Length: 228
Image (tube, rainbow, N blue to C red; front, side, top):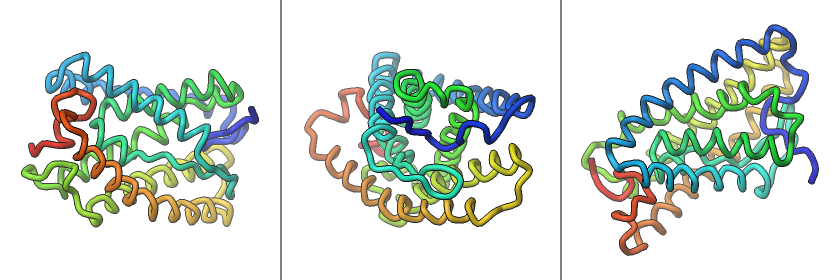
């Protein structure tokens, strides 16, 4: 199978500069641990493991099977961060993204492994930003399955804009570049993802509402089908 880079191309950040990616990844991991402890208290270990496993598989499928194309400084992928968050919660979605990314590197694109710290930061920090935005714009009396298109759009925009911002940062940091037309082209391409993702969110959540017993199965987050 051909090499399918995620976001940061090999060689963009080299030498001592790559150490920053380890620090940012460690910071993201620390936030993830906090959310993981909360998730374990809410639904227990079996549910957490199940949700993480599904999110990991969904992430790997997104990387390898969904359409993607080189644009500007990197590639545009359909990675539905807001969908994973709304279905599985912050911690399982975050761990699923990290494990799916790792599996993609180990199995299909070993050349990407040195960039793992940068790529995982690029995926996880915007996901945690979604959590902050969701807590602010979705009332506690609303289950995630009942979010409006406007709310889903806000979450998708937060995630995809975060991905673009981090890619732009790593390119600028690694190569000492200004915001070039290539970076701007890459960011503009993600407008397509932002347009599609809320529709995917609403379709997946609508489907989840129709599955009898899903609320008590442990396969979705406590908030997905039930108000806080």
